Length: 212
Image (cartoon, rainbow, N blue to C red):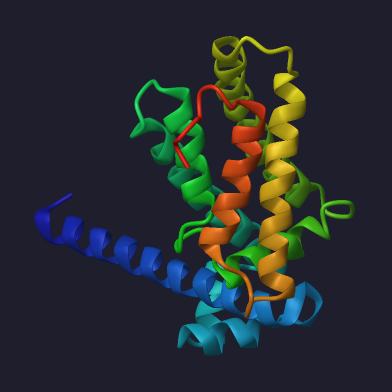
């Protein structure tokens, strides 16, 4: 393959990537307003500023587009989640604080993305593909948070279930995410983080004394 052909191939690949991102971004925006049943490919194409033919070229069906959209927001979340832990080093206190900060960051905790998450959650009973993607994300999240809480439990020297604490922590965050959907005008990121920190501190008072 000569240099010209390589450049043309790379350009096509980059154009396809950019078009996919535009279409997925448009899907997220429209899903948050209309839901799955009301969403149309025309909504997506108009929101992306692309022709419907381009949409059909990249995604052969609405269902495939929805699956790729769910994969996108799931991967985006997991990438951010992993970085929030990695940059905190080995201290489990800093790791759990990093998770809270990530879960209520302006990149992750947007009304549009939270609406899309809950839209897909409502469909997992009927859509095996959605269920599998959400399950993989949740299992990974729970596995890592269980490990962090296990370290905290051992250092605190208390008899707590790492599984129960992890599930309670995740349920708390999901509930606060839902608050943002139900009452966005009064939702406050700082207050949401404080609620999570109080939950953590109530279970590990020795290690988090004076930290919040």
